[in-house]
Image (cartoon, rainbow, N blue to C red):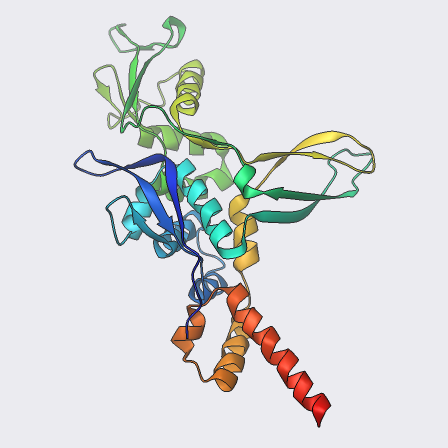
Length: 304
């Protein structure tokens, strides 16, 4: 006996371009199960970006004609596509309704605010151009000059992906400016005839040039809008709330290894299912059977 899986078929807002240049957008996503809870419980200090890579490779059955989907493929997905897939994985695992509590950010209030929304209503912006590279032209003021005073304005870049997230995250915790510079080094491929691999290319860009490149990246990238609007019922003021999908979903999934093993033991003892069958169930399916067992045992005890 294994848990029935609710598969979701959807379309990536960006898409995966394989080495042959073929774009893959349609994906099949299934719920995360007990094995994934076990992974989260055992890897609390694991890089969150790397954990997303691993979990997506387990719940994404296919991307276009690519099946199975390896960690290497999910690592190469655009950041927005990874967020999109986490949304769909959350819907497959727990449904689309989200209930959370936060605090009003106004200093003279600070009261608890409940938010309730559907992930289906989160705005998704699909990219028009699918890359893999993009070109732009810096303004005259932002142009890069070489040692001879020659100006270069054409910039070729790609969009950040999961591999960039994994590499940049440790830097981001220490210094945001350093992390952004490292991201540009990975994503900016050339400025005029100068390649990013040339020493000092990114550091030689002016703050204005970096700002223009970042702005252009934001314009062409697909986007999952994860900023929610909320109103405090106490002070009645409105405010914007960044919804940390990754932490929220992982928090819902995470359980202690001890509790997970006790649930497996309980179901195996009464139903005689194997550990593999039980661990392939989603949490909701697993606990639904536990609730049935508790009710039945209580009924039998009362009948004695």
